[in-house]
Length: 110
Ligand code: 5GP
Ligand code: ZN
Image 1: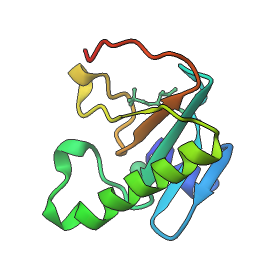
Image 2 (image 1 turned 135 degrees about the horizontal axis):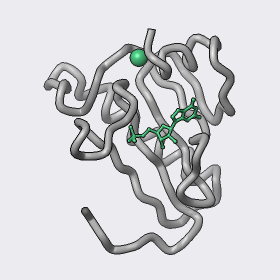
Image 3 (image 1 turned 120 degrees about the vertical axis):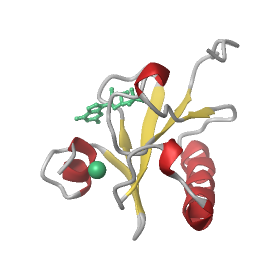
Image 4 (image 1 turned 135 degrees about the vertical axis):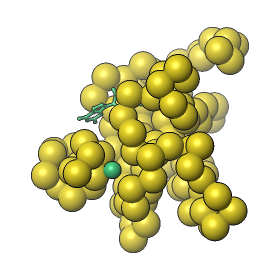
């Protein structure tokens, strides 16, 4: 099982922010902003590069939850990022969306 599958299963502790049947959200262990939350599908998908049209409802749901969590965290502005593949900075091979905010974020896109 991958590290995020273990977190979802409760085998590795995490600070849960949100959970439902299909997704789990928890605080990043090494936050890059005052709010830094990881939103992951419970189903193991390796990376954004593996997504297909069939995942459309899931991904839409993830963004709806991101908006809801951002509101609950008091964020008027926030950024959602996913890294797909090693050269893009992906270090955990289970699809995850970084939800970051709480400070002025740089304009850099790369
Ligand atoms: P990536 O670099 O793959 O886009 O993001 C992986 C993220 O997972 C990093 O921000 C890293 O801090 C976070 N992370 C890695 N291991 C753990 C862990 O065991 N618990 C938590 N909460 N976050 C983790
Ligand atoms: Zn996994």
